[in-house]
Length: 115
Picture (cartoon, rainbow, N blue to C red):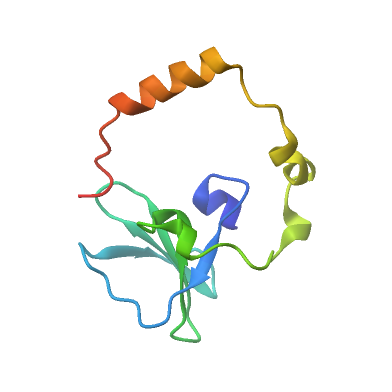
């Protein structure tokens, strides 16, 4: 389910005790009979996984201002991952020109996801 909800092969989540929303209000979608997903109503960014039977909220670490503060510590449901995901980090990096072109393109981007 996380792969579809995030549109990615991984859904890094961290339990967020004492969470306070500082901007906006998340929208909720009941993604199954046991949980709902929080997302940004303005841009659609996946934000959370929330089970109906407890008050625990798991936050998508990629949405944090500093994801380095919440590194992954455990793989949940790894057996459902596509077979190639274990080797993604071993793939070759592009040549320097491609990296430079990509860096230049990224430098022009103005994100509207964090307002």
